[in-house]
Length: 118
Image (cartoon, rainbow, N blue to C red; front, side, top):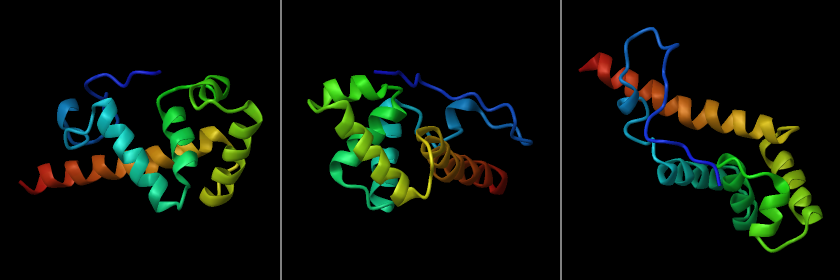
């Protein structure tokens, strides 16, 4: 599975934000996976659809996801079709981008606003 590392690179934010603080400390793979779980709940994804989504966030390809979840590639593709319907997206990359934009970047903005206010 993919690794997220300990920090994120933030070079496009106008105000200086330390990478370790960029996501309110949510920079470990476990925290990213919890945010992915929360995102899946918000979009009413089934538990199995959330598993498939979280594997994608971790950088796992569909074929490997099928092996890890002990199902066929066709089943994984079916999960993705329903994920697209529920999120209003048309590709796996778009779903991941939506997660980054709506969850990770929202946390980044909140952390940045908190630092500016302090």
